[in-house]
Length: 278
Image 1: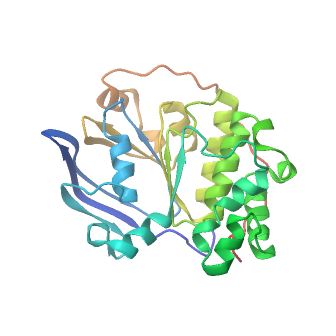
Image 2: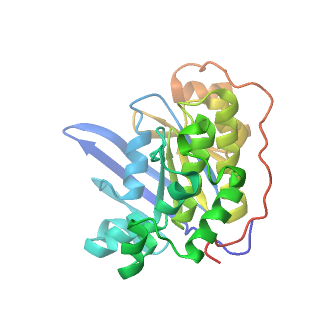
Image 3: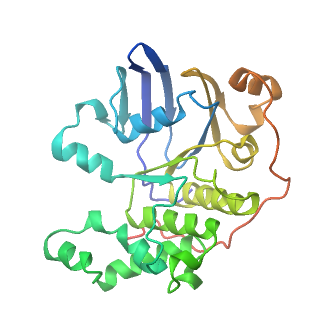
């Protein structure tokens, strides 16, 4: 863990979300300390994406409270709500990159929310300051892609593109990173590289990462903590070593197929600066 902690503690207290009589989340209570890599597992429709959307405040819980440090998310309106959403970095299954742009330019897009006035207008014309470029270079160094900085993004592999997307999120300087099935479209090796990158983000930066995952073995290998949802209820909360076959049965109703090989895929280990903007 680094000395400077970026993320606040995230507290969910009996969080419930209902849609027209359907309960998507059912009294979820959990506390997540800064710098934790949390994997959320469960069948389709278990409430995984709904949980992420409540944390980003894309939706508001029907009941219960979510606190981001001392801040009650339900109370946020207007500029305060926009500021919270700007502090949450979202990684999707599809990479959300402009494929014809260079890698560096895609990462610099993550700086836009930090810029105001003439600096923002200048950046919209792809004229970023030396300081912003330095941030982008450090973020690419952190994900092991500094040697790809001048390449067009569409020349990279899927795993490399997802790591560029992570670098873009780091350039945003978020307080929380959410991943909605971030490795679902990748092969096993590239998926492992992306998972190792997310684990590195949490461990070195003190930045909380919460990701929904389809592959249980990824969760077991890379996560610090696993949350298992079934029909909107939290049925498992513990470290990877506690996720036994019995616990998996509680989450899925059966033991899911194991398809991740036993070998891990280590990334280069760059020096992490506590703040990417420093």
